[in-house]
Length: 275
Image 1 (cartoon, rainbow, N blue to C red):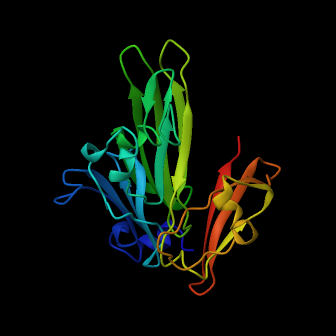
Image 2 (image 1 turned 135 degrees about the vertical axis):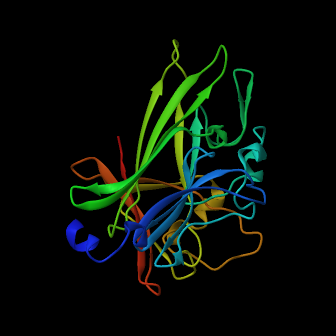
C-alpha cells in the first residue's frame, strides 16, 4: 500500500480513490431523503442520514453484498409504527437499526401497543459530520451523527453513531454509544438487523460461525437444524427458519459470523463486541 506522499504524487484529488458525497434523493419513494454515498477503494455503500444513520446498499468490487427489499429506499414519512407496518418501509440494506425501547414482534406491554422492531429506523439523524482525511498514514472517511427517541412524559434515549472506512481495508466500522438523557430509568433494546443478498447470498453460500450452542426458535426451524449452515435456492412460499447462536468468544470478548461464496471468491465477516 502506498503512503500519503506516494498517493498524492499519483492523483490530482483523493476523490479519484475515495470520497463521501452528501446527496438528496430526487424522486421515488425516498424523494427528499438525505444520504451519503461512500466510495472507498473497492468498497461502496450508502448511508441513510434520515433513517437512523443506517447503511443501505453495499458493493465490493462492483458485486452487490447487501439485500434490498421490494420497497427500495423509502422516506422516513413512509414509516408505519403499528403492527407489521414496519415492513412497508423496510429497505433492508446492510444495517437497519431496531429499538431503542423495543424490538421483536408486535405486542402490548403495560397497555402500550408496540409495533414490529421499534421506532429507531424512523428517526432522523442530527449533528451530522463528515470528514475525509489522512489519519496515521491511511486515508479515512468518517460519518457521525446521532438519533434521539423521546416523548413528553416518556423516554429520552440518544444513540451516537460513527461509521468509519479506511482506503484499501475493505472494512466498515460502526461505533455506537447510547445514553439515557431522561431523569427516569427507561426500557432499552437494540438490534442490529444485518441483511445480505444476491449474488453473495445464493444456493452455494455457506454460513461461517463457531457456536457453543444453536437453538431453534420454533418447530419450523427444527426442520432445518441439520443443515442451517447451507444456503438454498429461492423457494416459493418458504417459511422462515430462525436459529439463535451462542458464539465462541475470543479472549478480548469479540465474536465473528459471516458468509462465504467460493464461486465469487468473497467472504463477508461480522465482528462484534459481545459485551
